Image (cartoon, rainbow, N blue to C red; front, side, top):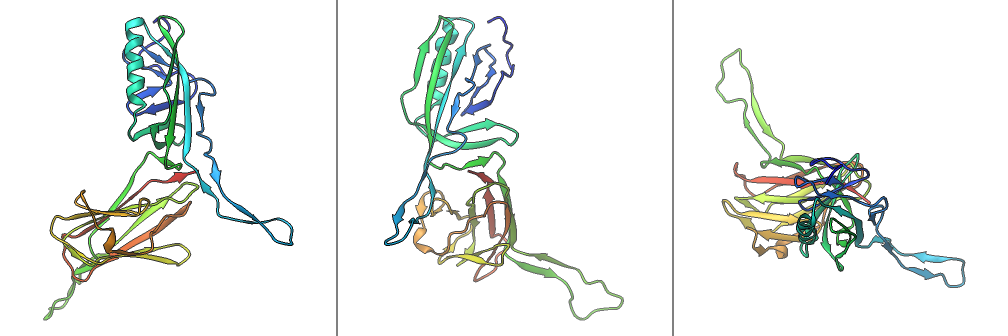
Length: 290
């Protein structure tokens, strides 16, 4: 259609819903516009809390405040070169607004993402034979907005190799290789984020310790062993531990689930009952915003 060039960025925000980029013109020359107020719910989710009236006193006792699921509404127009292209575009939008987990990314000064599913009827209204208006209702079960950058660090078990071996001949040089067994993850956001911790065997009864800037410590103990090549994924948000992608090992975990407070870095260390150089701890996280 005249006036639009493939790859052109349109006015306003850009939103990627899965593989579909809204706020731009695609390779087929279809313009996917977003209304000026066409991204509702991105500013903040609702909250839930409870207040208990004080007996014989002013006010109430405040309970904890929690974020509810984030409900998002996307509205805009599809402007296609012809009717056939418009029909294909509506199918694309229907597929992008999936019933399964889909990453929605908002392109801002700091790009952020949430994981959404379609949570209502997809509304498509033909305006002409080349233009249609759309409205998509989506829900992010986890209301936090995450950085598009995934932090990842890995370490072996703590060890010291090399160093002084007797007898020696002067002059001598003492060299040693030290593995601290510690990684550092940072949350640059405004709300606590929860890391994913992956253990690769062989390792026996590992303990993961998280050191906070104020000196407090949280620890998780896995009371079983991993064989060579075994992979245990500990999701501190879902409170799960899954072995080799299939078997729950939650029953073997004890201790406190760690999280990374906003604007801080934490040191994550680990140890085990015995040492094997092949064992690995990998920690990943994304900074999170309200």
